[in-house]
Image (cartoon, rainbow, N blue to C red; front, top):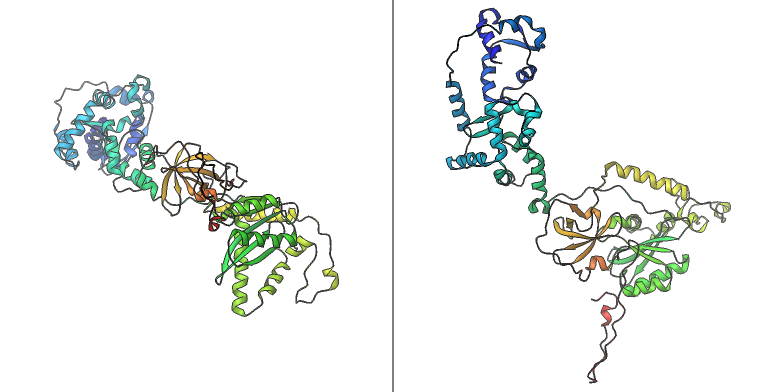
Length: 536
């Protein structure tokens, strides 16, 4: 580069104002010359500044093909004293750009000198880099790719205009970079402007991933790909149920997974006993399903309802707590039925007529109504219809059409979904319990692909969907987690055991223990208002 500067200034009167092609046998000079001025070392900056007045184009030519310049380079040159004025000015300007106190500057210099890797690097920069990469010391071989950008000035190392930070000060620099708790990209962008050390971006990412404050206020997880419930092969084999309110009254809704046929029962109260009576009336009309899918309401998680499921011989499955989407069939039907009730109430129509018309309307993509799929006949409504249309007809299985309809829904839903990474047992994570804030917890057990048991710092166990769990880089909890799992919280007790499709076993009624002293003692009975709840 110095030869190019000397040649241009020597023949200034011949090349000034003209486009000139400069041939060089040092290929790195071509890339260095095309770089922005601020990306090269201070020494090269001074040379490039002297070339700014000329219109040059650097071209690489192998040395064996440059016969004239190779011969002229062997001419004798008289020795001239080295001028260090420019170097001193450059050092002063760089030190002036470091907005740190003299004490802090001295600390950085001492830490740089004490760092074995940077000490070796500084000596290599001052002496000169080896020609071959294999000759570089192993502890600084990672700096080989940007060796032309590294300079040593007054005990400090720079990569371009970025200060190289020793290992002992990297944690302190990370704290200062993340002082405002900005995100990963913003912090990395800020650091790349002023600081440098190997794997700095990865260290920033790991540091922010372990920040408890940032993890607490992280955004909620995005939606995962849809996992639809399996379509049963016959009507009323699998039924979803849910409770809803309308104009101050409570209602129980049951909907068939196969036929989408809804049944609605008005509830005087929402206790387990009244809920069981409502289910019995529905099952008496359509039969007992093989599986009943509900949420984790107290009326569904009581001991009385478990006993009802055992006596009537059906499997009771519950959805993930705080995640109504997992009981989507019932939730969607509740929305449809509530809209019918609202419109009928406002228009002065008949609620039962609205339900009848809905049950007689064909399902999109199937071509048959819920009544045809359930009872193999069409309902007679207020609309005129021929007798032949009302005759019972054997309906072939519509499962392929229902599966195709379900696949279409999944396709559009998955367009904006992302697969969340798996979480292993014992891993420290964050959980959304009741609010949008993330609380620390640890994975206690994996029930299925998206259902987990998590334990918080106070040793309470919750069942949560994968969408409510955040994978972080934290290595410890704010408070110690006990190894003994205590009583599971209401979110789990109303839902599930270690198996994804099983209800929680409820303890039998407590029997009084015999008094070893033989003294008379009254019999302890559970209060009646607690019969619908699990007591621990």
